[in-house]
Amino acid sequence: MNITLRQLRAFTGVYRTRSITRAARELGITQSAASLLIQQLEVQLGVKLFDRSTRSVQPTLAANEAFHAAERMLSDASGLSRRMRDLAAARAGRVAFVASAGAASALLPAVLAKFHAAYPDIEIDMRDVAADDLVPRMIATDAEFAIGSVEGEIAEMTIETLTRGRLSAIGRRTPDFVARRSLTWDELAQLPTIAMRRETRIRMQIDQVLGAQGKRLAPTYEVTLFNTALAMTAQGLGLAILPTTMLPADEFPTLIAKPLVRPAITRPVSLLQHQGRTLSPAAQAFVTAARAILAQQSGRAEK
Image 1 (cartoon, helix red, strand yellow):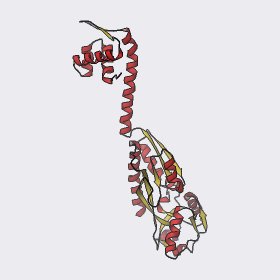
Image 2 (tube, one colour; image 1 turned 90 degrees about the vertical axis):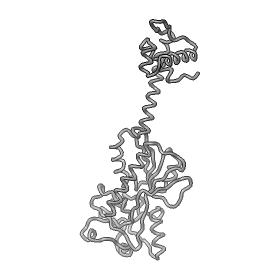
Image 3 (tube, helix red, strand yellow; image 1 turned 135 degrees about the vertical axis):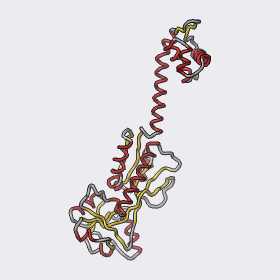
Image 4 (tube, one colour; image 1 turned 30 degrees about the horizontal axis):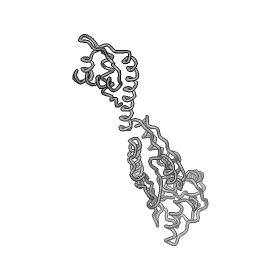
């Protein structure tokens, strides 16, 4: 049995109007086409749906039984069609993604706020994880993409740089620190500092670059989380060594970043996607918003 929506529309139209002519007019088809659709439906169902005369069309008991079921099927089909249109237009849906803890705390709140204002009916499921867990969690869950810092190529993944953060010394807004344009790593070595632990990716990058120049980082404190370093810096315990992009100005208004030079080190924040998989319209809208907002943030940070 292969009942079509056109047959159901013709049937419900005739049932309501008690007229093939009026039903055909409502459907925008000819009377003969409407009559043919009813005949086809009767053949497929194996029952007569209408008693026809030259003056009237009267539904049979079978038609009375079938009408409400037909309307439910049409309503479901219409609802599905609306839902798909909403999904296609990113008016509805769900975005599930993974973000490194640093990106989730410093970069993505602004993206989330602006995206929610533009797409209030889209559900957001952001899983913030340690940087080392970014790729494993993306692979193991239903996340459509991930945002965070990664190095090198990753099998069956595409990697797109969204923004870059220059490693900086982050300190309190004292007159002396505000007056500085930058700090060298040698100057930094003479001051109390707060760095990420040696097993973190950012610290490995720092140690590798400095080691190639015969330099060595010996921080006063080592921590695991960016926010811990920033909170300690806000209390005057030392200068945090972090990418400029990892300083949320609204959360830490008393702190300011100064670029570290000789050598200058940058760290990307990237978008990871599964190769060959199409993002849902909602996820694509989020990624588009993230690209634009992070680019704006990066431009302001460089000024």
